Length: 244
Image (cartoon, rainbow, N blue to C red; front, side, top):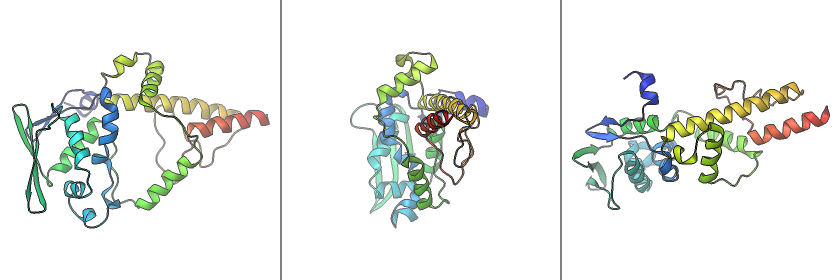
C-alpha cells in the first residue's frame, strides 16, 4: 500500500497482533473525550510524569480511562467490561494486555509510541511538538481565540453543516471515518475563509499578520502570529465595505 493509498484507506491496520481501526464519525463525541490520551503534551505534565515514558505518565496523570475509551473505539472492543488487563510491578506499569476477539496484544511503555502515532495518523490528529515552549503555544492559542465570537457548539449542528456543504446526508456522514470528516470540515472552512479574505482584500481591507487564508487548497504555514478566526474576517469585511 502506497502512502497515498494509506491516507485514504478506511481499512484497519495490524499492529502487534491487533487490528487498529479508524474511528467513525458516529462515535465523534466519544472520540473528542478520548483524544487527550493521544494528543496531550507531556512537557506540560508535572514531574515525575513528564520525565517518564508517555504511557507511564498517562497513567500517572489519571488519563487511563480516556486511553481505555480510545482503545475501545480504535480496536472496536465490545461490552461494558473492556478486555484490557494491566500488569504492574509494584507501582510500575509493565503492560496493558488487550484481548480483541481471537487476537491478543500487549501495549507496553516501550511500544505505545508506535500505537499512538498510528491512531493519530488514522484519525487526523496532530501530535504535539514536545520541543516547543508550552507556555508560548498556550499564549498563541489564547491570542488567536481572544477576538473570536462565542459559539453554541454541538455535534448535531456540525454534522448537518458539513453534510449541507458537502452535498451529502447527515446519516451518510456518520459512516465516515473521523479523519475524512475532519479533513472535509477543514477544506470547507478553508474555502469559505479564502473567499471572505479575497473579498475583504478587494474591498481595501487588510489583515494584521497577513492574509490568514491565502489559498483555498492549503493551510498557511504556522507562524508566531495569530490567525484571525472567520468571525473576525466577517467583521473586518463589514467595516471595509462601510468605509467605501
